[in-house]
Length: 587
Image (cartoon, rainbow, N blue to C red):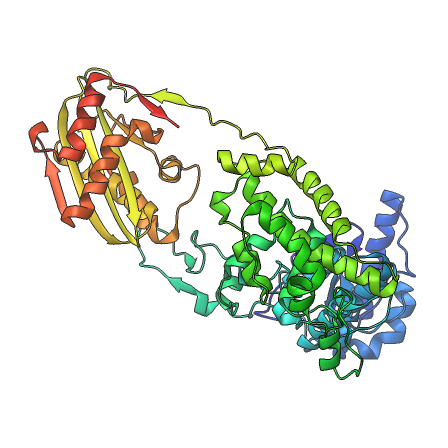
């Protein structure tokens, strides 16, 4: 505590209380009287054994006297208050030993030998990684403590039956996002730098508005740890196969196994030899003895060849005998093309390799005979379980349905979208309606708008190109241009319609907008005509404004229209349809 220092926000919280005094016996005596009065009035007793007396440098002379008055023993820093260590001077690693102890206690209660690799990932993400989150958000944790916590997590992930094993993949690589080739074990142990000045900038000030600090990292202008982390994180390249591996319909253990295989993290003979352990290599999945490697075992061994050939003939898809990743790409589709056939095909690829690995382990450790037909039957059973939980967004082709029927797998039904009819509605007589719309394409944005009277006749229209920007910038700029046209024509009692929920809610004060568009939003609010109303509509009611926005990419400037015959040909047809009251189908 000191002048110009950060204050403590909660001196009293539940049954934890911090009381500050100057340490003089007279002040301590007064404090004791206050405690006694509280006990008499509340009929609650203060637990002196759980309380502690912490003295500063200037109060050590009164130590014995103060202890006698209060009946509380002197203790040393640090103290844990509301889950955060409070100490004098710099934070020390020993002050945060309780975090390491918490994680150790949880690990001691878990039976590692009963957990699969996928189960360990789940526990790390949901339990262990959440232990230090609160402390990390409230204080600066020394790097040595973070390293020890990471060590414990890595040892737990790679250990087997309680014994330490090789760490096949570095922990820093494991913590990268899914699209970079790994599961999303968020690196919660990184800290945010104490100074946020580099990420916060002052925007242009206005005399009639209060000054605000804007965090330019987030779109809202507010500071969020997630946005700042994404700015500081060193990211790798995105991999198509990685995004397709972790699908909800694929058994998590199988996805985790294939992740290990793609990163050479399986304990096959050649990897063990590379670690410096001399052993005789022999592939259990081959009739003629051959050396065992990950690619050979899962893709080109005698057993793997028979299993792959069986399913390759059914799906009419080859596999790559030299690369797990290339085989996965051959057997998968992009996420947007997801249907039940694509899900079954991708699941088959993953389950084939996992099934071969299980058979190899049973042959090596339980002396079971490897039978490719047994592996195929187990895969078919697992595919049936996968098919039962699928909820595809697209239909299969007739050929794809025939393939699934040959496997005796059901084709999951696709929920048909609700189709509705909409039409643009004319404003009441005496009122005007302004429809605006914005768009963005390849980093450029544009907007358009049209004003019509109660008979649906054209009053004015515009099409404007705004240069670099987002879709929200196009939407808000189009609204600002439309209001300027209304102001120039001296129109009041205007009904405003937009298909942007963000802009409509921002104008109505229901939500905020991106910080860099704040001043444009204020301009719109100040220009709103008297008797206005603004509502959100579906896109099918706003087609004319949409076509005007699209037209701006052709002329790359600003155009206005006051006669129907001057409208672009791509706009005129929809304008007439609106005027005639024709309906449009929303799919």
